[in-house]
Image 1: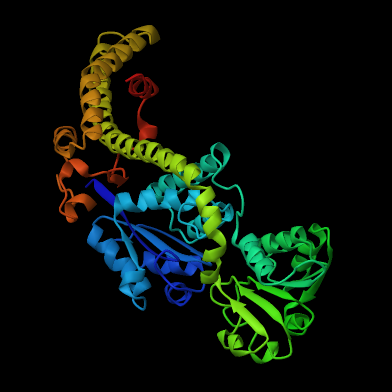
Image 2: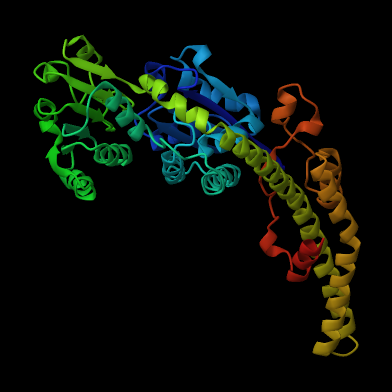
Length: 459
């Protein structure tokens, strides 16, 4: 049976959710989430991404209702208004928007591309990536890279790290001050470089793995040194600004640890939080989280609106190309089945002809070549028109024609097609854009003769 695959996605992000709600939708790591999603009935592929301002998951199933059931548990503890549910096409478009930075807190920020690639590899390592999600995510990454090379979407404040430093500079004079960055990941590196550019006098980088912190300290021009994570609280007493961005599941800086910090600006970029929210009650500590960065990014949003419009047009273009790719693959699956069965008949009949002719005298190699060439030509010419018709049917979402072709050319085809995502949502079949998730038994493009593949490409 040919199967259709639809993507179902769910997103909890800064667009509608608070930091606590994003945290409630998050899990320990992407790989474990993908592994869990794959245990759900009907789920053949799964992808997840978690950053400081979003938690998202996508699954591929035969039926959309299976996908919705699979991702429901992720948002069980999240307010419904904070959750964005996405069907097949919405998921494809959303992934492109995420990669292009249009869904980021800082419009057009750059680090989301790296985060998307990391999540993709983590999902792949958990056996979650199949042909449908691979096409979708690789297209999203391509769009994100195009957006940044062909438009001005990432000019100005381009990361949460730099936005945090901008916020700190509004609250205090950073010149000749001491700053502490907790965490040596990408966010910590971005914050350290932004603090360096802002003119701090000294930089401390705290991390569980000190060599990683040393690497960041060595990349900045300002005087910098690396310390262990357990020394972060005492280092905060010397710092005017503290920016945290670790992956810790527990508070790195507790309220009591900051009691003697004095006048300190603390900005928590981590998800889950690095700094105990109770620290906000300390008289001399000003604590900000990701939600507070919106005021910083307002001006950047205004500057990038023209570029965002260009990116939207780019996404429309690439979205159409992706749907065309899916449709082409759907048609090629039917075409592969058609040629596979025709090839079997041809080989059988050519073999019979050789046996009969050999009975009257052994054929020469040249004679055999002529007969095989004739048979190949007949197959190619007879199937040329059906090939064209099937591709046109796919382009027009005419699944009935493809189904009929499969019944004609594959006696084992049972004619069953599960409803696609569009039909599940009550839309017309013409709006369907699903792609088959697997080739039927016995059908492999590798088995199609070279002259047939050439015929396909010519069409």
